[in-house]
Amino acid sequence: MGYVIEFEDGRKVFASGDTGLTADMKFVVGDYYKPDISILPATGGPNMEPEQAAYAANATGCTIAIPFHDFPRSISEAADPEGYGEFVKMDPFSALDSYKRIDRFMETLRTKYPHIKGMYIPIGGTAEV
Image (cartoon, rainbow, N blue to C red; front, side, top):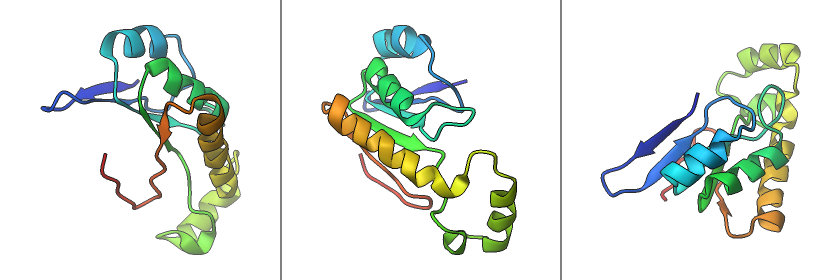
């Protein structure tokens, strides 16, 4: 389930949640709510593949797209390296390679949808929009 959040200044953010590509992203979110920012899962597995997430960003009509569902690039970068190491052993869709899919998402935005600004915010990072 996704949410559209409207701020006091009128800006709207679509947070898609864990989902695949749906027609609602265009016809409900894009055509009706018209978000300025879309936050989309872009690492595949049970969610959207990078190219699908970029398509969804375009369908929502946003001007800024933020990918999520990435993981630390190495076990040593994790806040809990031991716990993350155990997670990686069980992970069916390669947590350690998620950054490659985020890179594909950003590249797809640059090449197919240059009117959308891709904004990557690393784990623990912040950004001002």
